[in-house]
Image 1: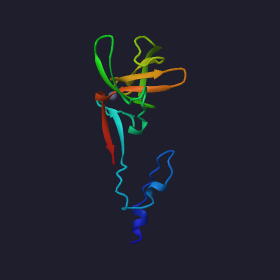
Image 2 (image 1 turned 60 degrees about the vertical axis):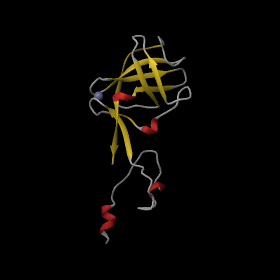
Image 3 (image 1 turned 60 degrees about the horizontal axis):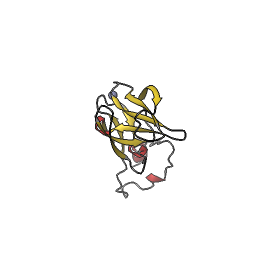
Image 4 (image 1 turned 30 degrees about the horizontal axis):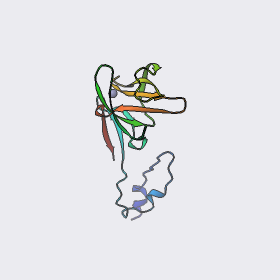
Length: 137
Ligand SMILES: [Zn+2]
């Protein structure tokens, strides 16, 4: 019976959150399992669903680049494990006032999206079909 203390030794140490989410054991049916978004090519962890932001009133955007390629992107406040390429430019920018840089997977170098930066703001537009959602339970 007192083994239960040992078995529950699972430090859910999510940074920046307080602990009152685990006050009850089985009572809460809320499925709060963590998931994250990873590079579909190599599995590199890129961002988390909670980093989704709205830009220009929407999280999802569809754009066409100068080469006629269409991209379905989602906007995220932060990414990890990505590398930017080239200098920021406002050429053909999809978000007025924002300069962009190509953003690649830091592991396999797959093109995952763009980093957008204005004088006051930074966000990342990621190509959604180049990401997979991974359940971390
Ligand atoms: Zn990758």
